[in-house]
Image (cartoon, rainbow, N blue to C red; front, side):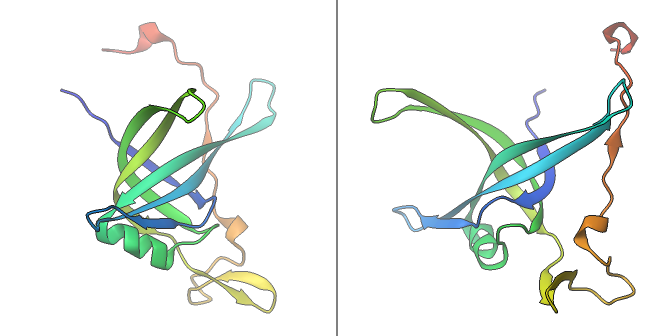
Length: 149
């Protein structure tokens, strides 16, 4: 049995680009950044960022174009696809993308007296988007012989 499934939660790195195929089907592209925070063996906080290209088809592509913009939080569920082609300079190029099967939009933001606030009732809203929790990974080493399968 094979499985090609990916889940990411991150922020859009650019606005959505919507196009139509010759047959009239909508396709949208955008980038998502995800981060990973951990503490290394020396006790220092480390962080790395991954950038993902996302492709969305059909009605969901149109909805993404309508409601998403750079900086918005998004949950993407899909599969990974790698494409290869030869460009106009005869150079081999490759691109790895997430082909979306489902997308959930994060909370909307609005301008409130120069500060960004979440569009939720005050009792439920965080005072600032930066107050969202960051899950940290344990710096525990995995020993392959300890894996039971």
